Amino acid sequence: MTSLPLLSHAARDSIIAWCAEGTVTLHQFLAEVHQLAARFPAGSHLLNMCCDRYHFSVGLAAAIVANKISLLPSTHTPEIVRQINIFAPDVFCLTDNEACTVDLPQMRYPDMAVSPTDTYAIPQIDSKQCIAIVFTSGSTGTPQPHPKTWDALVSSVQAEALRLGLLPNSHSTIIGTVPPQHMYGFESTVLMAWLSGNALSHAQPFYPADIGQTLSAIAAPRVLVSSPFHLRALLDAGLVLPEIAQVVCATAPLSKPLAHAIEARCHAPLMEIYGSTETGLIATRHPTQTAEWQLLPGVELIKDDNGVRAYGAHIMGSITMGDIIEPISEEHFLLHGRIADMVNIAGKRHSLASLNHLLNSIPGVVDGAFYMPKESEEDRITRMAAFVVAPGMEASYLLAALREHIDPVFLPRPLQFVDALPRNHTGKLPQSALQALMQAQKLA
Amino acid sequence: MQENPNSIPSNSPELQREVAALMVECLNLEISADQIIPDAPLYGEGLGLDSIDVLEVALVVSKRYGLQLRSDSADNRHIFSSLHSLSDYIAAKRTR
Image (cartoon, rainbow over all chains, first blue to last red; front, side, top):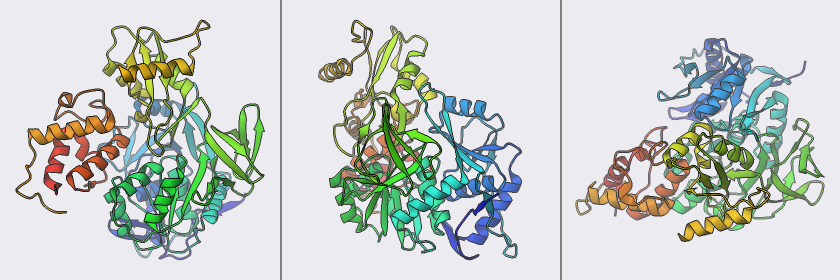
């Protein structure tokens, strides 16, 4: 059995996190990890809902040490939680929020006291241990599991840190505006801090002023890991920001003007990363310099009838990507938007076919279709529309039914009740007909 | 943060109506401003806003009233729990 260390920090007093109370050393972190692991209930799966990124990281490390698997669904609606519970009947929910409403046995994140005399070695993790199972929405509405082994995660995240130029043990701190419960934040805010021997900020800043304050409270060098949505808001707020060493962005490609504006405001290089829940990170790009994405070492693309598949390096098997990819050399490709069935709103992906299936399975819905309008303004978030035939049904009833199943970003706006959908004689619903319906609705 | 000068009206039905109108315009909501119930939740089952909407509204509110919204806790939903609480926050922090 080969094993790989949980962390790359060099010394007992290396800083592993910045919290509201100050810095956390490697020693304190490991002590808390062992205490938490000892308090875990028997179940071998957990849903780590901790809002505080440091709590999340302790929960994740404790789970790894205790050989439990962290489950990372794409959203936490009641129906998805029920399905996660069916997938793993022994699952429990680790939470640091008193108001957590997840309907699973809950374990509150405890207050822990650390003795300065205890010593802990950095745990060595079996490279084939399954650390996490990440779920995609699936085309039938049932979450699809994607297991992640420790060696695959280590390989992907180390390649990312190398590509971003994040030097090992460089006293850098990663500040994330994206949650650690999704693949991007999981890899790029938590694992990247661990595996590069650097620190993470406990915070989950939301408003632009929160981001500014979180940055200011932390010593340089600072690495901001964010999304086009948060970065646009940060720019728009016009705040004075402290020195930033690097900005990392993912979830949707940035427009070139926004990329330039971010670099100018932050006085720092902006790197974009590209990947998916299934593959993890596969490529990076410096968007002010080039439109081309560069694959991570060992990752290869292959074109077939169904699109483009990625394989090699940390990727298990080969995975068909949900975006239109044009390979231009062995190492480089261009992105041309998403494939027709895949919707991406603020980094959350869903199959259009499964949204339509769900809509039509609501009792009382005779016919219905979601429609994704063409994104009008770059770097702004476009919402879906839905057209529904459901005589006598209230919009609030339908929305509540959808809310049980899907993340709120996919709830239709507008939701339009119609007498019939413009299906053609073969029963198909052409995009052009839906577009015309959308136009008519706008003019009405 | 500058405190509320006396010349600026504090929270009032007028301010609530103004904020409601800003939200409707900013988010292209399919309702009119006076249909937003002051104490009803803006999130989830209420008006149905999500965090994307909240950040959009926060930007508009920041510019209009000369303030920066801040999470007072890990739960950024507090300010946006209702039209009433958002207006209270604006009334307390506005500089114009």
